[in-house]
Amino acid sequence: MPDVYTDSEDEVIINQVLSPSGFDTNKHPKYLVLRLALARSLRIASHPDEEFDFPKSKGSNYSLEQVTGKGRANDDAGLLDFDDAIISLLSVYHEIDLFSDQKQYEKLLQRHIRRGLREIRTSWSTSHDFIAFLQEELFAGIKENSSESSKSKLGTEQLQKALLEIGVQAEIKEKIQGARIDRYNIFLPQVSHFDSLRRGLDKLAFSLGLGNEGIFIQPTEEPKVIGLDIPRKRQFWQSIDGSRLFSWAEEIKKQAGLPVWLGQDVLGRDFSFDLAEAPHLLIAGTTGSGKSITLHALILSLLQGRSPGDIKIAFIDPKLVELSRYQGIPQQYGDCVAHLVTEAMQMLQELIAEMEHRNELLEKVGASNLSEAASNGRLNLPKIVVVIEELADLFSQSRELEAPLVRLAQKARSVGIHLVLATQRPDAVTFSGLLRSNIPGRIALRVQKGSESQIILDETGAEKLLGAGDMLVKVATNSPVRIHGAYITQDDIKKSIRYAKERG
Image 1: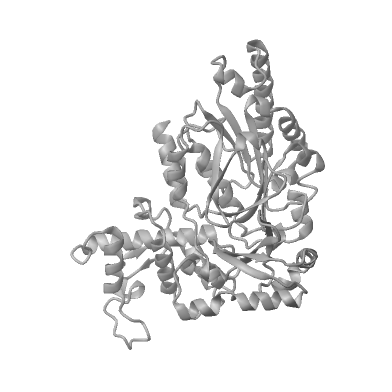
Image 2: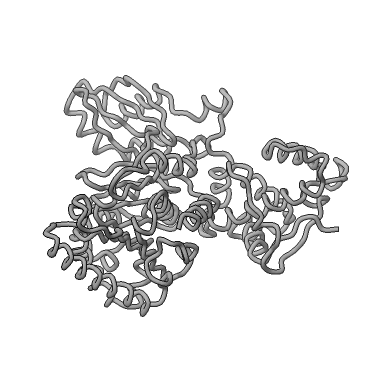
């Protein structure tokens, strides 16, 4: 009798994991992927809900004998009986006794497995190494034993030796551990060695075996002391829980403007900024860089604690993948998530008309901007944020969309309309000079080439980021700030949408 049911989408990702894009073998049975999915779900703090009880389409079904090895002998084709161990895990996770409730156990097991499959489906790209993905998803942040720690972490002597190889004599004064990097504050007795260090960063990274991941220099306030941000191996990263966003929102719920939270800086301090002061954003990063999750973090930040009278969000998503789930929230601008070129053009033209109307209202009340009019109690209008996912795809269908975007970028800030434009193809065709000159706020995730970093940030550096949400954020400052983005799960998105609908 089957105990765990999947749907067609679940089966697709199971087969992808076993395909050449994943484990590259047809020898592994499907239950292996189901177990990995269970492990992935158990790393999420929130409980899976009832949506996973009833598959929406026909998939497959699996017995406990297959999934947990229930009733199998230890020498039976290598399939051990882990059923009691898994019951124990789920009992502790849910704080209930599942040994006495077999039906509830099977229900929760299915929920976890199907949620884990969804997380793999939405987080892993078949163009990226699946084993590396597993290391990050299942083992990042787990404390290592002392012997493994000593093998994996960079030693002071090793760093000093590598510095000498590029002609830099330095004294290591302090080491600070962040979520993904270790910052070494080093003293340079000879000021001339600073230039040698800056020119030799690529050689230093090569000497330390960092591959394509770069070392970043950070200034300090101490004379002759510079900070070196050196990444650790991925299995020793500490993940940044996306559920932190909700407690952050409680802390700042009375704050004016449009505060958004993306994660933490490299030393573990929360990072947020006011989108209204940005006042528009370009976001770009290659596939797997974490661009979409960053976009969700920004949207969820805007939704928390804000009514439809405070904010409206216009969604344009030509692929109708990432933003379609926000369809129908009370804070939505317009009737739909636009995905056709005609729908996008109509929405942008409506926004331009709204911009002109608001300018007329400001003139009547004698205010220079929406914030001033609101503070004086003369005008109370919601701010509008326009979110476009995959701008390059939109422009490939019609370049005419650039004109209304430029016009909004030039004139909409004072009336409370702000743009967030995202793409995974940051080239000069997508981000033209006219767009870039009118959108000062930039977020660069990992890109393929230094020229792409130059397009986004007006400087190189994003090509040396770690991926998976590691980003350079340039808002209200001349220098980019390095941020590790939080991991926003599908559960976090659903929780925020449910909260928005309940309040609306």
